[in-house]
Length: 322
Image (cartoon, rainbow, N blue to C red; front, side):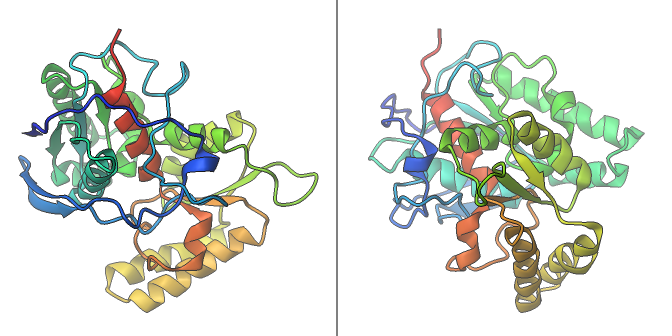
């Protein structure tokens, strides 16, 4: 576990609604840093994400918004040390992406980035993958490790806990149980911003439709589908044929280095949902983020959930404690 003690700024950027704030960050300040976790060494750069939630306006997506009483960053416990984010990762890639956005977006007005403490262990993901979403002995051991590290982050003074890896949110309830500080849930963060955006149906007379593109049914259901439907959104997912012919083969091609094949298959997967009049598509799998190039027009209709998680984490670290 490594703590990055950056001088904390208490300046809070003006809040704005999602519909006023989301677009690609092209001119954010670039920061470089490196850190070493217990299990891996990595460096990260503040490169803008290729995928962010788009609206018709062009205000910076890194603009934090005030939390309300129902947000995931304000409903549990009281903060210990204001300004320190506790980051729990099981994928160096996801942790890097989170940190690069967290640093670059929180410093865009010249402030210092809030400090953060990070724990990253890729071996935990392997143990959980072996369990196949079942509570096996390997799964229990891995979850126990994550709870121990969560406690360590709490005791280190973190005012909120963040898991950049969407995969880990399958076990959010087990990991977060008893947490004394806000433990941000990626699904809550995304749904909150979608509600604030006040989206209008693409087709007259229908509900607002949100597409969910995932490689794991359990993750998409627990993280997004149930939460979206509880807020009145209609949710559309690829059918079995689309999963077998386009979604999963796209990830497989990407893993093999076939970028052209991966991109073409993912484009087909997105178009299948978009022709059914969805407002936007949530890329509910870390494996799908980053396949398409930054300038691909289809990204204007996609959400990278990590963006909402970063925005809420920035707000939480700047939120005064009671």
